[in-house]
Image (tube, rainbow, N blue to C red; front, side, top):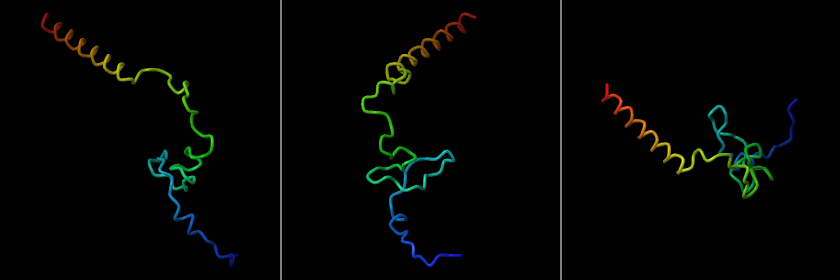
Length: 89
């Protein structure tokens, strides 16, 4: 049996939405936490996320600019070595 109660859903529908991307590649439709861009499930909740200056967040230096530059130099050297071996055949 439907209720005769008038629901005031306007403020919730007008609230900003969470801008997180879901696993299904769509946008999250939940309302964002007040003063934040994410909903409570995607990192807007109090205490969520890593603490400030968290040293545990850096696990390796695989994607630092120095490591990327070093891999590019190694790839160039390998390319030159392959070319030299092809000439020697």
